[in-house]
Amino acid sequence: MRSKTDFYRLFFEQLARRGFDVKRSQSSDYIADIYFKSQLVAYFSKADTVIQNPFVTVKDKLIRLINDTAQNTANKAGICRDCPYTDANERLPNGSYKLAEYNGVTLACKEHHLFGYVFSTYRTAPDSGEMVARQIFYNKEFAPPKYFICY
Image 1 (cartoon, rainbow, N blue to C red):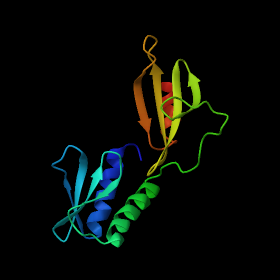
Image 2: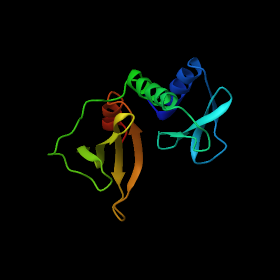
Image 3: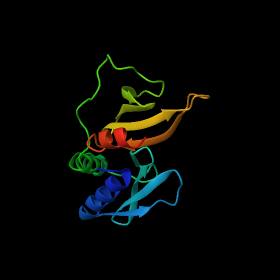
Image 4: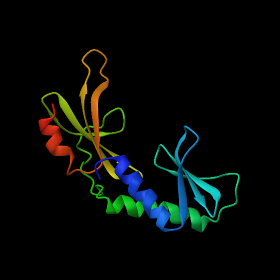
């Protein structure tokens, strides 16, 4: 999985195969509205979470099916499930763990509730200490080559 967009495409295709209708959300808070039998049953948030529609009675089994489909799709997409860091790695203020630093570029990793472990590379701005030129990788296979060549 190279990006979240890859995951969304696969996930929404899987939901469609299971009888759901997925539409772009009218709300800026959500990525998609998930319908079942023409009824809005859930939202898929920007935080990659399935949120049940509070105004409709929905069986827990249906919400579990959506969540399970998301988890299975993420697993099939090739996410990283093996923890790449230990307690010996430096913990950064944003909750990530620093894995390496090369030529002023940091490779960090953070646990994600759906995608397992998400990698990112970034430079630190000398004046503010903020992350700049950040790139996110959802699969460790894509992170190292770009990490050593990009910057």
